[in-house]
Image (tube, rainbow, N blue to C red):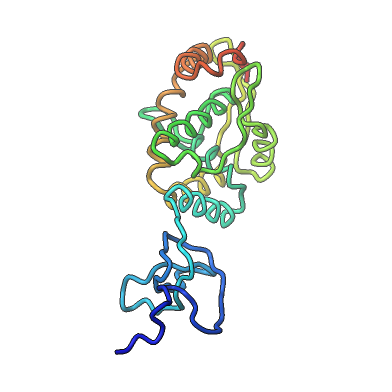
Length: 236
C-alpha cells in the first residue's frame, strides 16, 4: 500500500479532525490507539476487545504514585470524607499484633503516626500518593496543620469519638472509631492498595506501644532535622 503522507509522523494530524482532551489512566505514547477506560479517562489499547476511541497526539507519562493518589482521592469522595482523612482513619483502624483495633490512645501518637506513614510511604516511592495535611514544625514536633479541625469534623460526622483520659500519668485524648466509623474505615481498608495498609500496620506497631517520651526520642534519632523544634511532649 502506498504511503500517502510520507512526511507525517505517527500520531500527527494530517487533515482537519476533532481533537478531544481526556485524562490518561496510564502512560501513553504519541501514536498509541486509546480507548475510554473510565469517565473522561483513556488508556492504551492492549486487546482486540478494547475499541479504539482515537489516536494519542502526545506522550503522557503517568507514575504509580500519581495513579494511587488519584484513586485514593476518588475513593474518599465516594465515602464522603476529605482525601487527607484516609490516613487518619487507616491509622485509627489498624490493629498491630495484640493491640485493640479501632483506637489510638493519644492524639499525640496519631500526629506522629501520620508523620511516619508519610515517611514510610516515601521510602517506597509512594510518599506523595497518599493525600496528607501539611506538617508544621511546632514546639511539640511535626504535626498535621489541620488535625484538630479534621478530628472535630469526624466527630461531627459521628465517625469517631474522643475521650479525655489519663494513661501512665499523661493526659490523653483517646481517639476511638464509632460503629459507623469502623464500618466506613473497614470498607475503605478493603479497597485501598496494599502498600497503604502494610505501612499503616508497620507504623502503628512501632508507635502505638511507646510512651510519649520514647516517641520523641525516636523522632529525634531518625529525623534530627525536627529536633530544634521538637522540644516537649504533647500532653494529648
